[in-house]
Image (cartoon, rainbow, N blue to C red; front, side, top):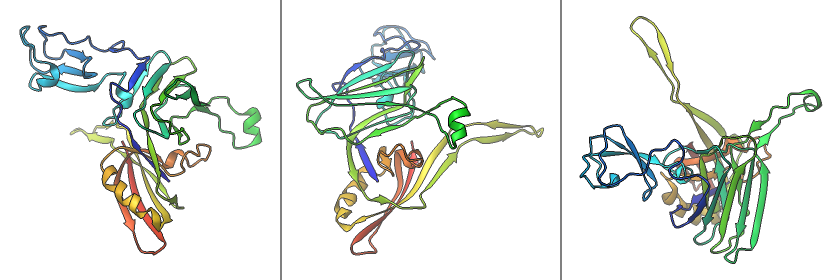
Length: 308
């Protein structure tokens, strides 16, 4: 199993994005000195976030939305920045193919894409001189055939593969990473684009469990009528690991850094062809990370990971 600690994407690192800011359907840029009414929304280019007016703002008020919490409510990042905001799960969407270019600070060896909407993904890395050092293109659709009759006579509908994980990026300092989501008629989407350095923390054992927390509820009225209020399911993974005792210092140092923080947890590394790959892949946080020191030559771990 590998865990990837995400590298925070800053404004200086995002060299290009095909998603406009504000994007179609997003509110206009906030203007100092303009009067705003309750319920109106604005975009702040400086913070790349959207704010909603909660109290009438007079034209003479010049305080920026991010500095006036009594007047404005932060509604989250713009469409351009949703894919980089790991504190929420709102995807970046676009009617056109999505293309981003990131200037990497330091070295990375991992890139992960989650919530992909598009038929193909292209990943290209260039060194500081602009020379291409890595290229990977993959189809994000899958047709499942269990028998030969399915292959020849089954339906031709393909299912969308939502996750892509690559651990083989060359750790070139000062590189530029380009990611393109395209193919098909659109719309296109990307819930999360994560880059960082991965760490091997042990081998996943049999009997891993993939669960889902259902937050839907039943609203029962006084007259006996029942209304289902659907909510999203949140995947959860329980997995047990074993590894050499020499991993203990690394794992002991990673645990306080990652507990309560969103990271990529991959039980089968990047073996996306394995049918268990997605059930034990999570962009989430560890609810519990037990280190068992019962054996002198091996370290055991119990991980409880909840998707974000």
